[in-house]
Image 1 (cartoon, one colour):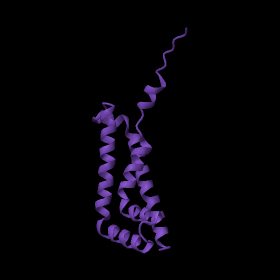
Image 2 (tube, helix red, strand yellow; image 1 turned 90 degrees about the horizontal axis):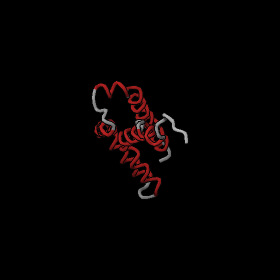
Image 3 (cartoon, rainbow, N blue to C red; image 1 turned 120 degrees about the vertical axis):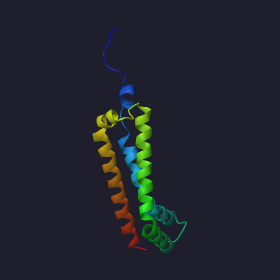
Image 4 (cartoon, rainbow, N blue to C red; image 1 turned 180 degrees about the horizontal axis):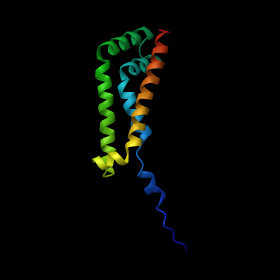
Length: 125
């Protein structure tokens, strides 16, 4: 029988911040004004012209509300994740600062990519 000083892999894995999941959720929530009508059009629930009109109306009038909602989703998920790890403090933020910046970068990247895709698809409507 050999004993090792290594921690079980399950513990080390749960200690990591779910950067990709939090970033994807925040970015998707921020661009939901355009993605929602686009998904409905791709599923055939509404026509492309209707989806374009809805997306234009939502993005034109409520884009900042959706972006604020995405930021709130991002903040809430980060808070829950840090709270679960007992790291919800200034020291915890310092410990996770690079991962938190990665979360923000992923969220902005998802937002930009989905904006580009929905704008490109809007050209075909």
